[in-house]
Amino acid sequence: MDDALRQTVASLPVRPRVAVVLGSGLGAFADELAGRVEIPYSKIRNFPASTAAGHAGRMVLGKLGEVDLAVLSGRAHLYEGYTPQQAVFGVRLLAALGVRSFVFTNAAGGINLDYQRGALVLISDHINLQGSNPLVGSNDESLGPRFPDMSEAYSKRYREIALEAARELGIELKEGVYAAMLGPSYETPAEIRFLRTIGADLVGMSTVPEVIVANHMGARVLAISCVTNMAAGILPQKIRHEEVLETGRMVRGTLIRLLQNIVPRLAGEE
Image (cartoon, rainbow, N blue to C red; front, side, top):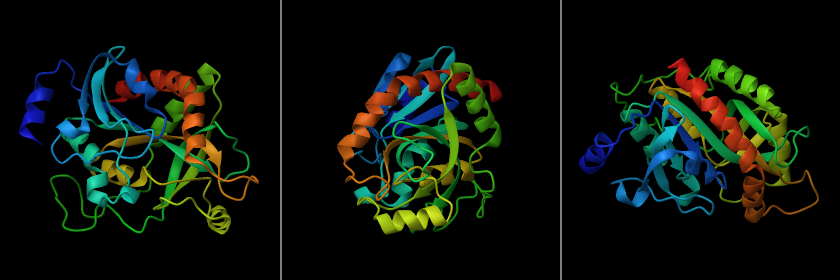
């Protein structure tokens, strides 16, 4: 860890054990933290810049109620030209700070015909079609095993907690399988038909590398997709990134309420 960052973190009154990573257009949750300290990624040595629209590019440390929380508002993507190791730098860093529970959010295209624009979906499993894995190369045994188990990459217990919280709030929360593509071009209708055939309900360009390294380090993971658009070929219209951001703004109040209810429960599991 960068010495200056270590000193900054050491001086803070928070010791986060839970972290939330926010996807495209979903950054408003970071503003809910009390006593927050914001650290631009540019101030953290080796932290990759977040260049995608809708990603603020800052680490926020603060409290959600009584819970010490770290939030990454924006992430790095492989399609930005980063290596898989660079794309997961933020997760590695948070784990070094003591985080043991991660909540990942993302914007995703809906493949499952039961979904509608604006739906929130718990990721129950994933299909990695990005052609890479952040664990390729020599393994640091101090971080995790050479061959980490991924049979429960998304904690069953955490998903039960999230579903219970959603029921109490009257929020519809589905579950589905997330397919990760490299991007940055959106998928073709033929690719979407292929993804549906192999069992994908959602498609996006992030999250999976982060989930892999979180599991590698022994952390538990919850992930929530916001269906910001229906995938190519499902509706007779083109896909626009502006629509992704618009939908993120549309559902942010619901997502914030859900996270405010879930995060303290995850902290109670630690």
